[in-house]
Image: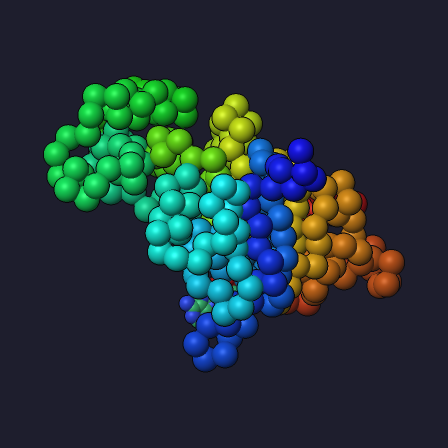
Length: 279
Ligand SMILES: Nc1ncnc2c1ncn2[C@@H]1O[C@H](COP(=O)(O)OP(=O)(O)O)[C@@H](O)[C@H]1O
Ligand SMILES: [Mg+2]
C-alpha cells in the first residue's frame, strides 16, 4: 500500500481568482483522507465556499488541480460528473424543494444515478426504499410524507442530510450546514452528520462559523484566512496564537493589558469564541 492510498481527494497548487481580480484561493495544496471529518474555519470571505465548490468542480481553478481517488484530475466534464455522483452537498439553506414531501426531496439524491428522462417517472422501488431508510437514519421516517415547508429548520437540514445519504456518497461537502439553526439544533444536526459519516466511512468536509463546534466535531481543522491555509491540524493544536492566524483581529491576551481582548470590530470576531474554547 502506498502512503497515499487513503487520500480520497486532494487539491494541488489550487488558485482561484474571480472576475474583477478577486483572489479567493492562493496556492492551496491539501489532501483529504478517507473517513476524516474536516472542518473549515475562517472569517467571511476567507475562501471556505470557494474551496468546497472547487472540490466538487463547481468552481474552475484558475491554476492547479483537484484530484479524486479512482478518478484522477477533474479535467473534463465527464470526470467531474463521475466525481459528483459520489460526492454529496449539504447547504446552509438546505436547497430543498419546499412544496414537495421529505421523501420526494430525499429521492432527488438518487437522480444522479438515472438519466434526465428517467427523472420524469417514479424512481424504482429500491430507490424509494433507500430514501425511506435514509429518512429513518436521520430520525424522520414519520415525516416522510410531510411537505418540507411544514418542517422546522433542523428537520429540513436533516432531510438535506438524508438526501445526501441517498446519493450513497463517499464524500460529503457541507457549506455552513448549521448557520441558520439555533445552537441546540446545530449541535444535534452536527452530531448526526458526524455519526452517519462515521457509520458509512464517508469523508466529510464541513465549513462552520462556530469554533466550539469545530473543536467538538472535527478530526481535523483547516483554517483559512485571506485565500490561504493558515492552520491545518487536529483541534487540540488550535491554541490562541494559531487562532489569531485564522481570525487576524483576534488578539492574544498576553499582548494586551486586558485579560481577554476582543477585536475592535465585533463583526470580525471569531463567532462563538469563548475563553474556554480558545485556550
Ligand atoms: N462568484 C464570485 N465572484 C466574485 N467574487 C467572489 C465570488 N464568490 C466569492 N467571491 C469572493 O471570493 C472571496 C472568497 O469568498 P468565499 O469563498 O465565498 O469565502 P467564504 O466562504 O469563506 O466566506 C471573497 O472575497 C468573495 O467576495
Ligand atoms: Mg461561504
